[in-house]
Amino acid sequence: MNKEKLKNTNNDIEPSFFSFLKSSFVNTQEPMANFCQAVNDQNRGTGAYEDWDKDNEDNIIEEKSGKFRIKAATEIEDFNAFFATEYADEDFTTVGGLITNKFGYLPEKNEKITFDGFDITILRADSRQIHTLMVYVNLRPDKA
Image (tube, rainbow, N blue to C red):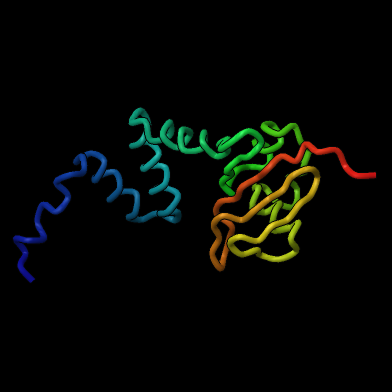
């Protein structure tokens, strides 16, 4: 292998950051913890964390009156705040976990379930998880 090609392969990394990473992995018991801390330090002030928050702002989107497109990764706490519900987040922390629990199995695309005044349709799912669902808030009074 050509040694010249191996030289200066870190041109896009600040020299001080590269030196820090190199020293963090030599003679250390916790290389991954050091790496994570280094990345966090490097990202401070770059807007990386603010972008993550913005990604979570559109977890619940109203499509039409009473119909909402929801990312399954939405936290139960956020769902509760938005819909004024009180689901516990002890057994599951996301809407996808809640829905999977209500089905009793991992539902597939286009499967539907109704509970607590919500009509829910799975919009996107794979063999491991639900990704997106449509929630219709059913405001019709229950039949007695």
